[in-house]
Image (cartoon, rainbow, N blue to C red; front, top):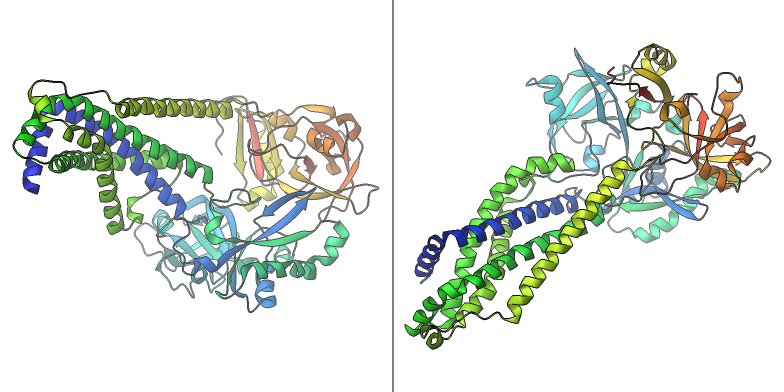
Length: 628
């Protein structure tokens, strides 16, 4: 019987070529989009699911209350990990630290600025489950001069040669010997690294022992029997133990919280979080779009099948006269739609494979079928194909099988535009219009993002990270060498560019002891305002003509308003930056507000101060491009 149904289905498929091609084309396009979206959803929801004991791993967050605004901060200082292990031996099984870094890597004649150079504790590869191709997870970072690299870096620097034992130089300061190579993880991770070196290389540095020097991530693995809520409750006393005096002195309290490992990637609300993040809302949107596209494809199939039913009315009538039961006809028509669905799925899979590299380039992701379990993937595809085939063919199957043979054979029209058919057409148009409107809204939103005036010059400014120690120590000389170029209009050195990292420092207003206000902070030279084309609304810019401007500062309008001042009233006010300054900085000017962070965020109070914490160089061009 199955063989008979298959023959009939294939015969009808080739008999009505145009109809079959249109149906297959529509279904395959819809399925292609659905397959790619499902692959994207799997990629985003499976991040960090491959770690052994991952459900017991948490990242330590600092929680700040700034003017009744609760902020969770991803970075902590180096002493946290050991203190948590020591103070809570029954709750904390193990802790590890990770510091995101970048810098110049040199091997022989090869030198590259690497953006994914991490430093971590020696237990990094036993704490997490990143797969090692070469090296022992327990000892691969045991030596202070060891470094573990990715397969891509091994090929980039050493070609086909064995990388183990090779020595690279980092930042013209540290020599590291390659002791291990790691491969691609079974799923994506919020940590994105190509190099991992021992964090203890910094143990002699002053900042490494300072509780207030927050520059790394701290992770803890809790005992499976530990009560997480109870443990979090104990952390308030932990902070009082190590920060009590500082809390009283600054009037600024900080608490701790724990973030589950599986939640890190999709949580974008954490401040100072230099790890990869996804977008929870985007997942909901893509899931909804996939369902709508699938519905459109299925309804298009239903409508075409129903419209074609007049041509098959006599076939149904004759089959019923010859003794065919309605359920036999239903099985036949559903079988035909499943066959079409199978062909469409094969085409869709091929189209998805062809489109995948372009999608990865657009999204900046590494979506791959190889990360999926083959058996699970095949089962899912078969189930999806069957559901689509049954769903798409269901209405036509029941509609065609209901024809009365006597009426059909007498020549009466079997096709009636039922309310269900009309509803399908209307619903299909509604979904199509909704998707068109949504697409237009997204295009307008992207146009808004790309054309909005952010308040500073963007088009002719080049940002150059200073990753070389020699250049950093001689940055002013480097700046002077760039300025004579006819292509360069101005050069500024700063700690953070618009859209980049900005400190969040506590400021004390003079004559108001114990009263601290936190503001975003960028350390700059005197050419910052000129280079970015900012507008001074009160006072003046930094100038070499004033010998005291090295200890001066500029505020933005939002910062002046935070103190209840008009821009002109802020001039002459004095502040001290808590924990970093020993001098009182005088406000000499107020700059018009500009978007120095995401457009999703309100403009924060911002202070610009002279200082040495500068590791970015910005160059304003007259024309052309600048390469260094």
